[in-house]
Length: 147
Image 1 (cartoon, rainbow, N blue to C red):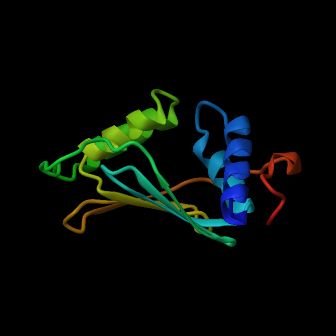
Image 2 (cartoon, rainbow, N blue to C red):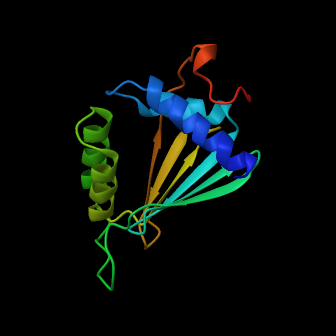
Image 3 (cartoon, one colour):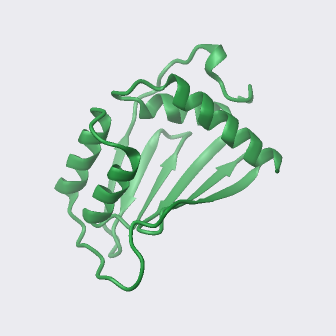
């Protein structure tokens, strides 16, 4: 296992341990940022996640939301915002959030851990950008100790 994978797994475990159920994403994101993760790009409906880290890129292949040929849902900003607010309120699971995002026409989203932004993209160039707040973490909550 590479240093990049070890560091990412350690940071993800630390992040899941400290993130509150409601409004937890900024804590998760800050833990990854402090561990040297700079970007995370999700591709839907494949559920492929690319993490760009200081130790090298890592790809994670999750369970696809669908298989075979299908129509891409039309980008629906309001449905996406609704899915985001449900997730931020701790209502539902992460796989449910991914499914709701796909249903809202999101084919890709990118988290920039330095700028604290997430850009959700449709297949025709549509975008919705959301910023998330900076949070303070106790030093014991940092994944591998990288800053």
